[in-house]
Image (cartoon, rainbow, N blue to C red; front, side, top):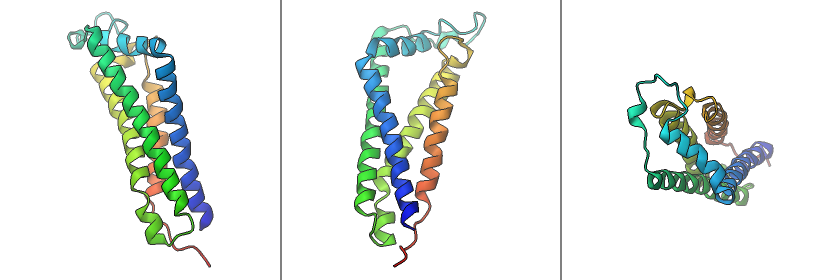
Length: 166
């Protein structure tokens, strides 16, 4: 059905829009969001008696490098999802085989987005650096909401599309 294809394209574009806004915000308000990364790496707001503080990274150069890598991954997520949505839009009325083959870039973008927020924020930030222990710098709930949304779109997108009714 055309509506299913259209909804898949719209959802990929919605993730592209979200990732674009996140990357744009991180670039244009670098210092505010850099503070978040820095505090997570410093582990200076986790429970005072936590025994994992040896994992802290105190070098500001590494904080900046990690933050730039995060921004690059968010931006690449946006670019891949935008390109993927446009590729699917161009194939909207094509046969099912062509439409299904056109999903690759969108799948790559959604997968990268999932990895950014699940691996980067939940696993590395949340678990390795103990971000979940911080009352002020805990991004785990937001990261969870983001990657679950992206995962839902990814699962929906990879469902095979049938031929359009003529």
